[in-house]
Length: 462
Ligand code: SF4
Image (spheres, rainbow, N blue to C red):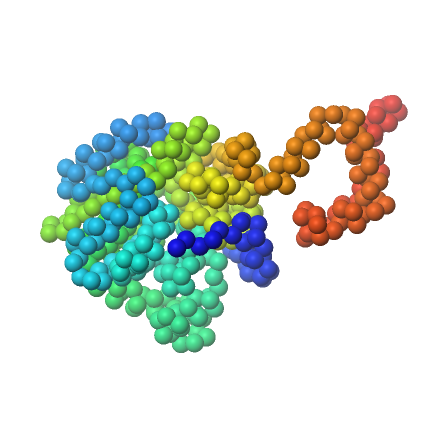
């Protein structure tokens, strides 16, 4: 059963109630953002790479059906079995059927490396309900899985947790020493635990970062080597891929691999960029191509660019709202600025609050390695949602009123004068708990006169 959705502002309020954690979360992500800047500045051709990546993605989106058909043909010729899923439910059903087909045991053992697509499809919950013993092998993902939480960041899934939280979780589930927060000790405990799971797994599920239409091969990027280990130890490899991940040619990989990890964590290259082309002798490889709303997004003129996303997380790390509200406040598998564009496409009503969870400062667009116009798209979503009657009612009414005031200069001047007087002689009329803007902020001192009055006076004196 799906959990009730807590609107972003309420969930954010819960997150910032822990002030120390909010500060630490904010500073940690800003540190990652600064590492990204340093890494970007080491490449004089950085901006050209971004332009090139954006152009390649433009081409890929404009020729998506051709590239996907070519990719399927090449992958099939290489010995990979390709499946197509229209939505999350079909994706989950295909994966379950494959697991049952290849592992007839009552409780099949499966390992999975990080894949935001499977998070989007809620594959973990579905397979677990069906009796599959599924273990996430990315360390951060394993931590949140043990805590029955979802990842709060697409690259750093457990960034909302402290060492002490991890220590408590491992003590409860893996039997580590209570109160031992030493990262080395905790990592070694996780490694021992995960090694057993790797050795026992019959099937490995991975995501896909890039699929090459020219060759039918695909690339999975991890820093822990867990996708490699899982896929090479298990007899069956199931790779799950959103249809927007296809790129035309092998030579384009170099552009994206240089941008991806520099943008994500400031590393020059991902520790493991694993290239899969065909199953090893005696083994089986399946690939599930998933639409789940992507074709609809492709048809939305203002939002199709969001499909260029390579899931680096740079827009999360720079976003002042994400940094201080935490990933879980976005109630969507992909949080942050890009998640706020993708989520309304999947369910406009449920996710209508997310495009408003932004200052529209544009920092996200500035860092995006594929030059997605993120803040413009958020602004367009606000207009679309308002036109659909899905924007918050108080905001819609207040904007209508403001529009009317701004359209009538006399009303604007009178309202400004009345507002300044009110704030001067009766500040409690606006500085009260009924005013959401006032909560957590100081009201400014009202100026003695409006800019218009000042300008007219000054001009007369000149
Ligand atoms: S929108 Fe751009 S910056 Fe954000 S995750 Fe995607 S590629 Fe990275």
